[in-house]
Picture (cartoon, rainbow, N blue to C red):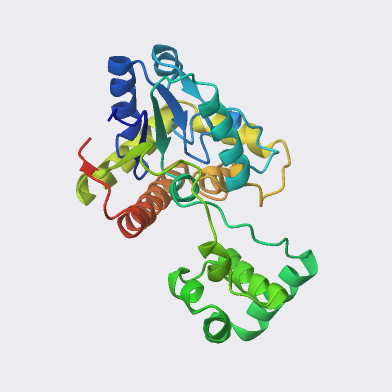
Amino acid sequence: MSEPLITLIAGPTASGKSALALEMAQRTGAVILNADSQQLYADLRVLSARPSRGDEAAADHRLYGVADAAEAWSVGRWSRAAIAELAGLDGRPVLIVGGTGLYFTALTKGLADIPQVPVAARDASGAALDAEGEIEFRRRLARLDSRAEARIEAGDRQRLIRAMAVAEHTGRALSDWADETTPLLPPGSWTGRVVEPDRATLYANCDLRVSRMVEAGALDEVKALISRGLDPDLPAMKAVGVREFGAHLAGETSLEQAIEATRQATRNYAKRQLTWFRNQTPDWPRASP
């Protein structure tokens, strides 16, 4: 039986997965397909630590910098784009690389066909969260969707509201809808691995990455992004570093404070990714960078 042509390489930010993918691609001739929600955006080359132009020229990279910051790419939109890329590879090996856990979930477990929830229903759930407070809101959500309540992190307002709105509007738990999925990649067509450095190394890499971002023009990138006056709820505007460096550009913090705030936010993000991959892909082999 031939080996699967698709390799999934997941891991937290600054773990070294892009370097590993490039080495593998140069050795095998594989295509590198982006599975990082921030590296989709052309406006975030520096802040998302996209592969350099030299690295992109050294191997065939797909779905990097293909979206404008004014767009809001969903998991579904990325999935459709990724499947279209895979369909056109004519048997070439591919490395799907990134840190966005839900992209890997879509590939290996599938996306739920959840009915559209009206804006009014979401707004009502948001108002209820504000009025009740998170503790009471969670108690009520637990009665409707105990699995969602248990997995949603404290303070994750967006997911709490979505879980409640789906349960109340459809009369069925979001978790139950999510159970009815079909993976985008057929079983046996792929192998997966997680790049997982030890915690101290990962955090040191995060700090170094932020320093290099500043040297590479992160402030100019944030300034250009802010100047567009985009909706702050767009995914690109929520990228780590936009708020922190934006505060410095507005004269609210020093550059040193902005750098430290971005380092802390990057470490926090990496920690959440580590936790996600440990919980969701416990059977995937772990690789050292």
